[in-house]
Length: 120
Length: 111
Image 1 (cartoon, each protein chain N blue to C red):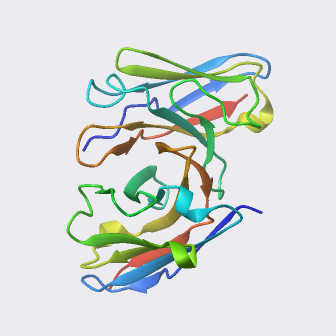
Image 2 (tube, rainbow over the protein chains, first blue to last red; image 1 turned 90 degrees about the horizontal axis):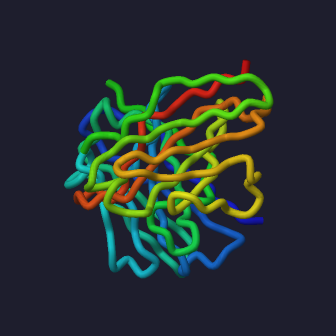
Image 3 (cartoon, rainbow over the protein chains, first blue to last red; image 1 turned 135 degrees about the vertical axis):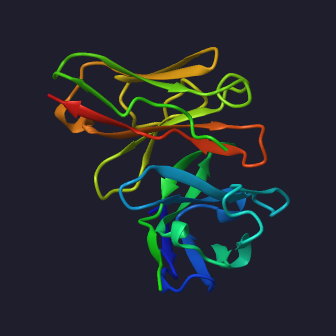
C-alpha cells in the first residue's frame, strides 16, 4: 500500500524549533519529488516547500524562506522539514505529499498530516 | 505571493453541472499548463482530481473535467452527486520563487 506517515508535530513556543518527518512506503521513494503543504485551522492549503528526487532542486514559500529547511534521505525513504524561528502563523496541519508522475505541481499521495501549534 | 482567486462557494442540485473558476496571472495560471485541482472532504487529506489543466488521474470519474482560458482555469463537475460536496482547491506552477501557489478554496454544496 502506498503510504505517507508524518510525525514530529506538537506544541512549541514562538521562536523555538521543530523537525517534522515523513516516512514513505509502497513506492520507489527516490523516483519522485516530495513536498510539504500546510493548512491552518479552518483555512485553505498553502504550499510550504518541495524537493526534487535527488535534492538538486529545492523551493520554499516566501513565508518560510530562511526559517525552514527541507531535506530527504532516500536510503531511509524519509522526508524532513526543519522549522526554526517558529511563529504563531506557522500553526497548521502539515501534510507530506508525493508528486504525481514527474509533475512538480501535482500531488497524488498525501499523508494524514501532523499538527504544529505555535503558542506561548 | 498572492493565492489564486476562487469563489468562496458554489452550489448545485444532484444531476446538474457546476463550474469552479480559478483566476491567476500570466506568471502562473496563464503562463503554464500546470494547473491542478484537489477535492477535500472535512477532516480528510486532499485528493488530486485534475493535473496539467485537464488530465484525470486513474480512478477519478470522467464527470470531473478541467480547462483553461487565459489566466483563468476551471473545474467542471457534471452529473453532480451528493458525495461531491467538499472543498475544492486549484493550484498552479508559478514563475515566482515559491514555484507552487494554491487558490483560496471553494466550498461546493450539493442541494
